[in-house]
Image 1 (cartoon, each protein chain N blue to C red):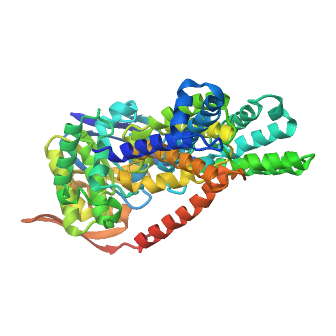
Image 2 (image 1 turned 180 degrees about the vertical axis):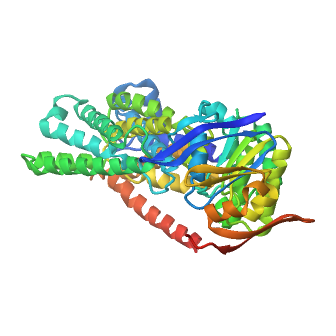
Image 3 (image 1 turned 30 degrees about the horizontal axis):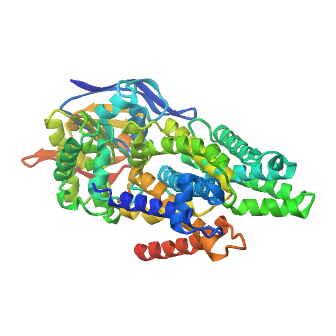
Length: 250
Length: 327
């Protein structure tokens, strides 16, 4: 089942297209990593796809009215804002905003989201007093509590410790396995190679590669887009990706 | 979820309303007071029904409007320092009132002054919406508010500057200090619809303000319509604060301090802070209005002055507490 279709999506900042004619579809069961160097247009793509930025072309999600859209897709922005010293459980419950308030169903959804993120013991604590990484996990739980078929996440694992990064990637992969779809921008290519079913590579606003990790993380793409060389091998422990060196720009 | 806090505040408001009805220069006994209020007969009945009752109702209305608006603005701007005067409505309403006093409109008929103040508030709203644009961010709203406040302040100073006689100047300065003395039911009927409608609009924004705790992008992705939210917020605050200022003058600190005091007790949830701050604001203004009658009954101590004297140290204490928490 297709959950997101972008057709020729273009987002302009002034006259300059920061997302330039991107098209792809995203189906149930996929955990897609959105990769690319800083300034490639990953955040603008996610925000444009959601309709948070003015755009040209089509996004199936942006065309939904706000209510149905918020029940179809959850968005985790890059900026991790927690404005008030609220309890973790109250904060995660904000994810239930799009749903008609039924206390029992909301409490269950909050519970599931907290447990999935390993935060069950954190429920009564004040979110503002947690560490940055813990706050990031609480905010992921908030997006999960929205219980939408599709999740768009902008750098969800940045700043997490290795165990928490792997745990978060597993949560996304599990959700995909259960029939959801996840599109997450990532900078950790090793994590992307191991956990994503598919990668989208962006460079200067354009989608330059789309496919399974082994087809996207080619030496040529890495050199042209990221300016690096890397070691990439699939062994008995699964795919292993390690950046090695910078390539001098010609 | 328990509503103990709201019940306590509500009980406090009822007690303070009763206190406000019982205390005054007429020196009536409590039993006499209530009997006179119910019968409405004789001079005591007149005092109760025409002087104390409207004053008590206005105290509750003005306090609720200021507390609720402060909580709503703080929630929208995600800043505990926001207060109802921030969007320029208070300054513009004061300018309208001062012009009414200067031109003699206030003396011409009872509602001359409050109506001019309301007109000032309305002008401020139209200006702020035009300046901040239909889709602007919170920042443009603050900047537009500051600009309008500065402009209104400058024109108010100009009116005072050009005032023909010292008595008119006294009158304007005293009006701006804020007071509930000598108000009648005419004032209640003028202010109540604006405060009630504006308050209802603000109370309906609770869930959206909650979602905004996660930032504008997250809130919008959860179905909050930001431009509609901002319009409702500006209209709600302007309607209730404009009306409150029109009948009571400038009363500061209520909208700043009350949400700050109650925030922790409601678990910092902006939606729950709205109702609690309305009750808390009503309670604080009623108590302060009782205090001005007890402290210097013959001197006509102004409510706004007393509120600032109470409010500023309270705020200093909150700053101190916040500093300790930050370590």
